[in-house]
Length: 226
Image (cartoon, rainbow, N blue to C red; front, side):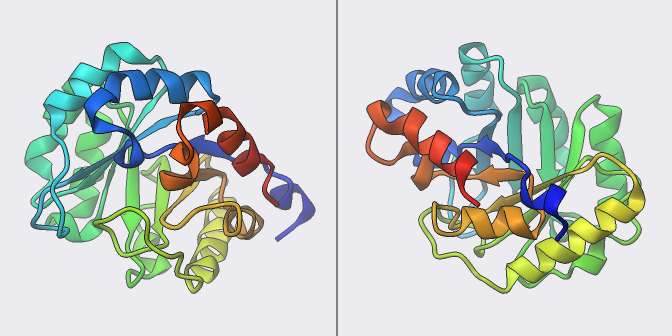
């Protein structure tokens, strides 16, 4: 990567999957005040991934607690029927998996028609070439550096090559497209992701570790990782 990309200060999008669900509104306000750039919301259906989390009702309830962008990662299938509900609930970015519906291009078009930024998430086994005919229509690429479904997993280092490949494709496109990484992002792996070309880091455990008194320091450390 060139020197400019290597010096990028990443946006931090803490995943509320690692927050205290008994006080979720408070947690969102606290992580916002601590310096979070976006709020990452992992939506899982127990079908597309082996876990069950939250729905649009929770997103709507959290919306008044922050003005930061809601970065909604939909790990649900079929996904198309839920786009409107999450848009109405307050999503700013809606990210979907190519495997979660029969026609990923149509899904991306539907998200943008709702006035939202459209993201495409690539699982560890999904190649970067999946983006070849989508890159002109998306606003974000999310590289999953763990298999989706659970927080606290270890980073899969092979995904760094994928991040590098996607960064090259984004730069070649000339478009403003965020490159986000999710899974096992901590002080050890964050720098490698940024050096590979990522400009947004999803960090659950690493952001919320230690409780509210540590949130600001956690986020600052992730931003400084090189």
